[in-house]
Structures are given as C-alpha cells and as structure tokens.
Image 1 (cartoon, helix red, strand yellow):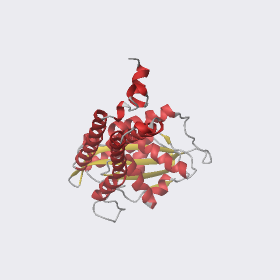
Image 2: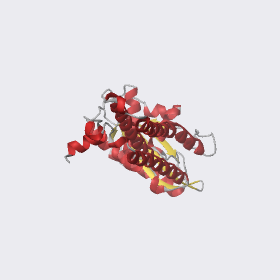
Image 3: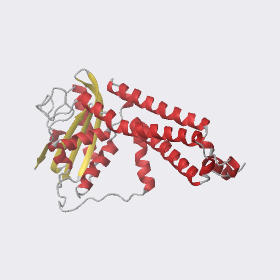
Amino acid sequence: MSLWRRFLNHIVPHHTNAYRPHLLRRGWMVFFLALVLATEGFLVASLVARQSGGSFLASVIAGELVALTNTERSNQSLGLLADNPLLDLAAQAKADDMAAKGYFAHVSPDGTQPWDFISAAGYDYKYAGENLAVRFIDSKDVVTAWMASPTHRANIVKPAYREIGIGLAEGMYKGAHATYVVQYFGAPMGRVLGAEVSAAPSNTFNAFVRQLPKLVSDPRATSAWIFGGIASLLVVLIALAFFFHIQVQGMHIILPGAVVAGIAAFFIVFNGSLLSISGNQAAGVGLSGGPEVVLTLAATSTER
C-alpha cells in the first residue's frame, strides 16, 4: 500500500476505510489516551522532583532568559539587548560565588559589589544593573517574577541598557538545593545611547531551533506541545468526519476522539495555571526585607 493511501486511510474518511479514519478507531484512541496520561504523570513527577532538589531536571536556560527579557522590552517598544560574553562571564562568576558561599544578595559576605564582578570580567560600563533569583524551576517563571517586582522590571525595561549577560549555578540555599540566577545589564562606555540594538533576522525554522532546548529540558513545554498536538489532530479528524459522509459516522467513532481531545485540552489549562501557581507559592516571592525565603531581591543598578 502506498504512503499516500496509508495517509488517506488514517486521516481522511473515504470509501476504502468505510468513512472511518483509522486514527479515530479504538486502538489509536487507547494510544492517544495513554500518551496523554503518561505525559501528565511524567510532568507531575518531574515537578515534584525539582521541588525536592533534582538538579538534573532544572530548566532555567540562559538563552531563554535573554529571549524572554527581550520580549518584555519589545512589548515596551525598546531596543533588544545583545548578549555580551564579558557580561556572561561576570554573571557566571557572581552565580558561582553565591552557590559556593550559600548566600543570596547583591553584596557578597566579603563586601564584593555587583560592579566588582563586572569590572573584573573586563567590561567597561557606563550603566550597569543586576537582577537575581533563586529556587525557580523554569525560565518563564523567573522573568514573570522579575516583571512583577517594580525594581526588577525597571532594570528589564531601562532604555539605557544595550547588552545583557546571564549566569546560572547549582548549589544549596538555606539547606535546600537551589538554582542561582544572575542577570547583568550594561551599556558600555563610548556607546551612543540613542542607538538601538535590533533583533537578528529570524524565520520559522530559527524560532523552532531556539525552542529545542526548552522542549528537551522543560517538561511543561514538552507536555504542552504533546497535548496541543493530540487535541488539534483529533479536532481535525472529527471535523473531517462531519464533513465527509456524516450519515455513516456513529457516536462510537466521534465520542472517544472528543473525550480524549477534551482531556488533553484540560491538562493544557490545568498545567498552565494551577501547577505554575502552586510552584511559585511553594517557594514564595519577595523583595529584600520581605519574607525569610525569597526568590528575588530588590534589583540594583549603577552609573558612572
């Protein structure tokens, strides 16, 4: 049987499959339902493991933090930030220092200022800023929390900044495993402040490639793609069944597909709201001087 004929038999209702696409039959419905339930089970298990300190499941990704930050700037019609290797080096040094010494603050226990890390990396700045976070398990949650804090948001949308650097380190904080996140902003000396940094040319393929690290390391993103794909496929199949010889379609063909699609859609909504909210509440979000367990400190910036 040709590949095209197989495609027709599985997708499109027509006379050779008795107007009942194979993908709407019991065997495939059992497979789709099992895949949905297994994906949800893996997602819940991975989130529990992360909250318990499974560093191998951490999914805060430097490139995604930069992309999400630039999205927020784009929403404010601001120039996009270019990744700078020296700021990356400075941010990594700060993250490693916090992880090694077990502190979470803009100033280290020995009095080292954020700007000392930036200068030590060889970055000659006119403006500089620092955002910190700890105990997050997802890049989007980090940026969402920063945007909810006035001081962090001010750094993210500050027009003077032109470049960005990210540092990530695994360590212990207050007796529990934690991912330390450092975000440095800068505008180098001699840069014309009126100049805008534009986004690099992009296309659909490049956008997909940029999403691959998130899909591999973030089970919430992966599950959303799986649930969305299954729900979309079943909706299309059901729609085709209605358009082609609806008189021969029984409820035993239509109903199971609708139920599985509904379950997949429910998990998309559930995972996007309840699971992310409960994850943030478990650790708490606060500014310096706020709750004992904090995820972010009041952001800091400087000029010279």
